Amino acid sequence: ELEGGGGEAGASMLDEVSNGLMHSLDQAVSMRDIHLKTYVTAIVADKAGKVLDLLETMDGALLSQEAHELKLRPGLKLANVTSAVKEAFGNPDKLAASMRKRIHKHLNKQEGLFEDVWGDVLDLVVTS
Image (cartoon, rainbow, N blue to C red; front, side, top):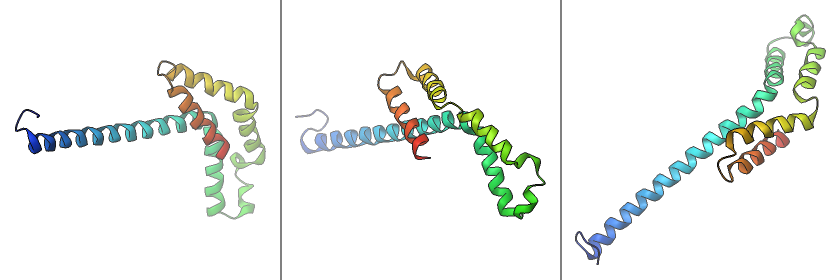
């Protein structure tokens, strides 16, 4: 029997402790997942940030102005969009190698974490 009351009282206390530990573990895993998702998003946004900002600006301009008025805004020319896309994604192999190297540098000491994060980056890039 367990000390501290024995029998049912001890088993009940053990269940409470076990449930508390499981809840804490679930919270820790959830927080880890949130932080990793934020990290993955930051890695991708770092490489694609200029393009994403430009596209968001264009989207907002399209919603608030007539299409012919957009020609008057020099920053929203198709050439600028094309240039930003080429700069960010010009060579997919170099982009992937750069992101992989950066992630590996940050996470290589934690077993299995690099592979998980790299897989999430690939999922985000491929599905976006």
